[in-house]
Length: 104
Image 1 (cartoon, rainbow, N blue to C red):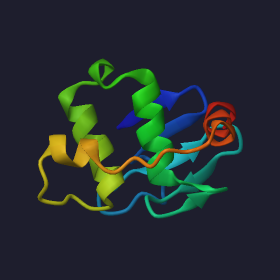
Image 2 (spheres, rainbow, N blue to C red; image 1 turned 45 degrees about the vertical axis):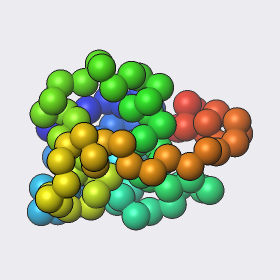
Image 3 (cartoon, helix red, strand yellow; image 1 turned 180 degrees about the horizontal axis):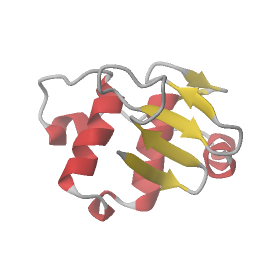
Image 4 (cartoon, rainbow, N blue to C red; image 1 turned 120 degrees about the horizontal axis):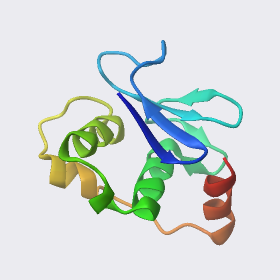
């Protein structure tokens, strides 16, 4: 499955680095792949996904897409409900970090 979060970010399980059904985050600007625990500058890959989904609006995703996103954010298939996994912890970050997300 491929989900384009913002023009510069793709969440996919069709990359060789995606293992055991856990998707990876791809920066479409440089094609770097990130696992859920990786840091991208001063922002975690989980935060990139959370902020990208928030920017796009969670109502713009199908339930199976939300489940797919939650698999990335949890790092495994987990036993949490999709809603609980979706909400997660989202730390407030700086304007500079948000601009970084938009640029990729």
